[in-house]
Length: 486
Figure 1 (cartoon, rainbow, N blue to C red):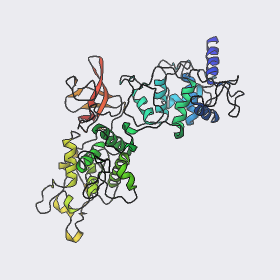
Figure 2 (cartoon, rainbow, N blue to C red):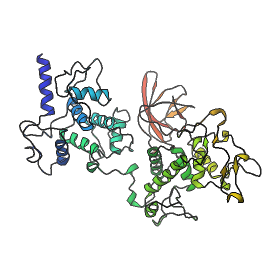
Figure 3 (cartoon, helix red, strand yellow):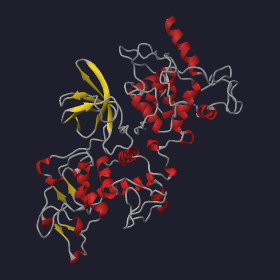
């Protein structure tokens, strides 16, 4: 009983009571202008974090797993009522018991096995990144720039996610300090930023400042195209194929800083011509907005009922986007899949050029040749003002074999390579690598990263991954194009 009493006292000391402190009088150890003073007061006023009976906030006190569970549970509305738990070291009468069980049920904070939770163990910054990423279901992963964060860390993907969400920007010198124990002051900053966008730090997606009005390097554009495609649920290979067909150099600006426009008035990387309803000045001068609008237009095409569907109609199938890609350029006779006069496939059709770019850029070889089409499926000519009239609403794919996107994997996915792959020590092509057979399980440990050779013309992405060979875990980076879900 004495051991349980010690646990209870310790938990209450670190979680804190309502006490005498208030938002009006403040705390004896928190003064206006202190680091994260506003974030601490924000959580206090919402009843998420509490002060001590003696009027202190304890900004430099460490945060335990039990306290973190309780405050996260309060923040996201989990059940915090005291309850019996599945953990031997979490008695039902401690204040955090309900929150610990609720957070465990949601997969936010989990035990160590054998019925042990360790409620009084102090949380470090890496662990807090994991808890926040899980609690707020953060998905986007920013290109990581912290020198002290390795792909071998359990918290690697989560740190990238809180970075993308503007919840952290690390320390000066490009370090994160994953193993540094977390204080209540720092905890307040993490949690307040997760809850309220007003507290978040500015994040330049892929490290690019849209206000710079400059063309970034090739791999930064690769990152921007990939990230926007993933955000909108479009296969990145399709988006990059369009960008390559429209604008080979992926250029937004001329050398003098003026917006790049084609002879037909197409604007920027995505060559936007239909500008109604969009901010033209931003289309011209904001690369990220230009990409966002282009992807949005493509996604709308995919959902248009007047366009035929292909194969399984799955948005993850590259072939399913065939007619949406056509419509990005125009549903006109020039883009007919079949040449009316000969009955043969039309290699000059816009969508055929896009899929050719997807193959040439090493992204994926698709099976659009297996879409079953004939000249009778399309009517166009003077009588239709050269706009294609579709005589079928759906086109099957011969053999029912489709090509899934290889750039939508996330941390935790298990994949394999369809040919012998190469796990490299850094995300670029080089002489050093570990061979990965078609039978090796490849465990993805983070979202896509981009070639460290910034001017590489490669359009594919690299995945941080782990392969186990001969009982040894080997970490590295593997190119996306030959990867398939297990």
